[in-house]
Length: 339
Image (cartoon, rainbow, N blue to C red):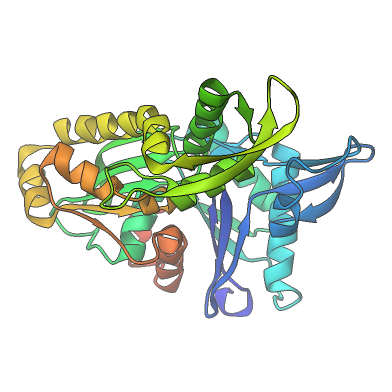
C-alpha cells in the first residue's frame, strides 16, 4: 500500500524537526517548539512562530520545547507537535496512514523508544520504524554502511552527540552523550552571568554561538554586541563579547565531546581502526558548524576530519534514502514493536 500513502522520514531533534516525504524530498525544517495556552492546553503556535515567542510570552501562554537531550520530555505536546507537522506536510494527499521512519539516539532506552513509537502512532502513523541517528546520518552522507569496513561519524545535534563506528549495517562501537548545541548555549548564558553579571536568554546565547562561537583559535578573532539585563542594577545593558571569551565558555562541553570521541576510538577493533585512519572521521549535525571544531578533533585524534556539506539535514536525508529502498536497508531498521 506504500504507493497510495506518503511514507515519511522524521528527524525528531531537540532543536529542530525535519521531515522527508517519499517522492518529494525534505518538506519541513522547523524548530521543535510549541506555544501552548496554559488554561486549556491548546496549541497556539508551532515551529518557527512558537520559537519567536520563547522568553516573550505572558503567564497564560508558554513556549515549550517538548524534546530534551534527544528524547521526549513532554509526551502530549510532542504528539500534538508531530500531528500538526505531519498534517501540514501531507495535507489530504494520502488514502492510507503513512509509514514513518524516526531517527533516535543510539543510547535510547526501551521506555523512550516506546514513547517515540506511541507519539507517532497517535499522530497518524500506520507503522513506525526506528533508525539510530548515526546510521541515518552516515547513509545521508553517502557512506557505505553495509560494507565490512569501518566508518566513523560524529553527529552533534541540539540535545545529544552521537559518536559511532559503523560496519556491516550496524554500530560496532558508539558513545551517545547528552551534550549538544543546547549545552553550548547554557554554557554561554552561565559564563556571562558569572563574568559580567549579565543575564541573557537562550535565543541571545544561540546568536552569540552562531556569530562568534569557536572551538579553536581563529586567524581573526570576532566580536559582537550583546544586550541583556544587569543582575546588580536590574537595568538592561549592552556590552561587547569576543570569540576568545566564548571559546573559554564552551571549553567544558567541547571537552566532553572530545573525551567521548577518544572512548569510541579506544573501543574500536583494530581492523576497523585501520580503516578509520584511511577514511577519517565525518562530522554531521548542527554542532559541526561551530568554527574550528573539526580542527580541534583533528588535533586531538591525529586523524583526518571532515565536515559534510549541509550537516543539518544529513539525518533526515538518510531516512529518505532508507524510504526509497526499504529492502536494501532492512538491516538498519528497528521495527518499534509493542512489549
